[in-house]
Amino acid sequence: MLRIGLTGGIGSGKSTVAKVFEVLGIPVYYADDAAKKLMNTDPGLKAAIISHFGKEAYKKEELDRKYLAGIVFSDKEKLQLLNSLTHPATIRDAEEWIRKIEKANRDSPHPIPYIIKEAALLFESGANSQLDQVIGVYAPEHLRISRVQERDGLAVPGIMKRIGRQMDEEKKMKMCDHVIHNDELHPVIPQVMDLHQQFLAKGTHRTK
Image 1 (cartoon, one colour):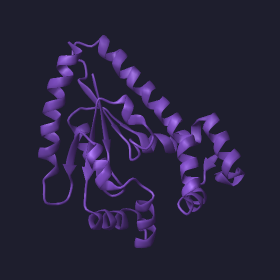
Image 2 (image 1 turned 30 degrees about the vertical axis):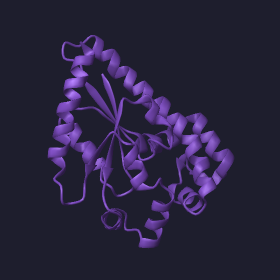
Image 3 (image 1 turned 90 degrees about the horizontal axis):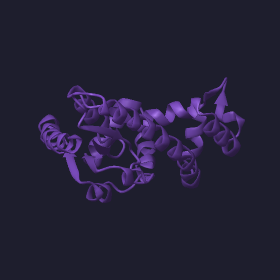
Image 4 (image 1 turned 60 degrees about the horizontal axis):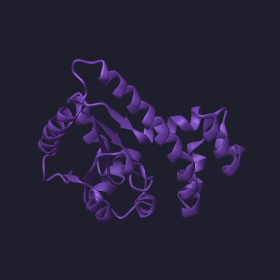
């Protein structure tokens, strides 16, 4: 079974691409969603966040995202600290998820040929080292800004601050094995289908 990573900057549309793979029957692990869940359910991670960011980080046992975002998105070092706490927990959770699929594959007459791990900080966390290939989703900056404005209702300065905290998009795409252009000029589905066929062939061969 192949392990395929899927990444891209804020507003690139990587989650949309991930949904297309899901429609094709491919299991997708959403690392960013998992991290949000783990910050509420993982006792060790919760304790570490409280230790570094104070008891105010939680209200009635639930993470106060607005409070935490106000700290980390205005301080690069605080953001790196938060990532250093959440990345190991998320990587462990993803590995457990993958192991369950691999175990099911061993007993299945129709094993899953590949899985997708979707994560914004795939290279930054070092999770790419555990993957066979990585897909990057690229969109020009003006489109990314407009998408985030529409999705989250954020002002442009706030969006630019978040973009500035992420790896340079051009550099990230050069590190990927494949790039899907989600720029409203190239249809996304044919690009996904092309990769899907490639991964099916390689993944099926590996499971034999």
